[in-house]
Image (cartoon, rainbow, N blue to C red; front, side, top):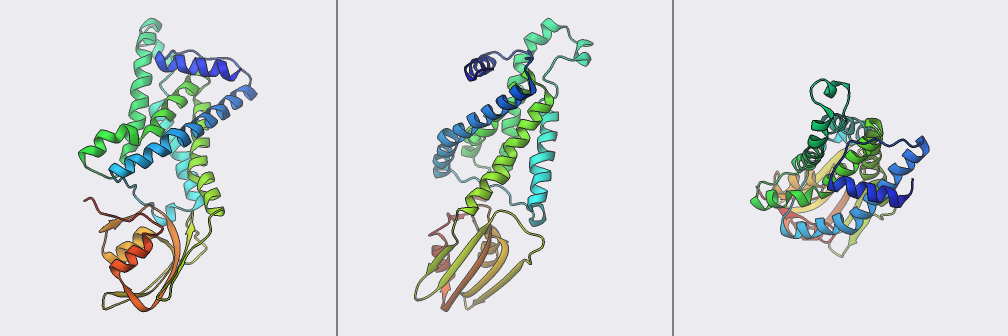
Length: 291
């Protein structure tokens, strides 16, 4: 099956979804999945990421940090890569084929008229449900939510197409592959090529090493020397940067992107809390809470 044929069929499916399965070899089905993976990766790079950048200039959205024990590579694989896609596929796409159950309650002609609305409704619902991954109650957030979840919206239509043209299992497999790339492969590659952040002056030394996942076999430690509102020493291993901010400034006074770090900071004369925040802002965007 040529790329041109797939593209035209997918475009026509978006205009008017139809419940039609195609018969191709297993090899061609796998190739089709990877063509769509490439399509979504390109879409993410040229549209979704730049759009997210501009949205974050207008409004700050933040996802809730996972519990440390849920953020191990094993738990991320089980929960994010396998379990969540299966549950979502059952809820949002299992019904998207005319089967023996529907034959008992609706004739084919009525199903064909209803089918496009089912695709649109379940795909849009799938996308908007993911707005719940973020917390922000401002009117602007709700207004921009379709753009904030654009990746999930586009993915919903892609998976719906795969589910209808192939079957439920290939739609689930595609969802698994996408979550694996987004949640494990890309973050791991980015960390592998990233150097520790080092900031050294006459007054202080700061070393930060970012980690993708929490390692259960490594000790989690926190040491903070804070005297007279000055910070003299911080040593942490396997701690969210958000949790470090909470320790210093109070819970949720500021927020920052979810990331696990090892931090070593020392200052002979100490830094004020505001000075330390400015040091961190050389590398990270730290924002006041919007609560």
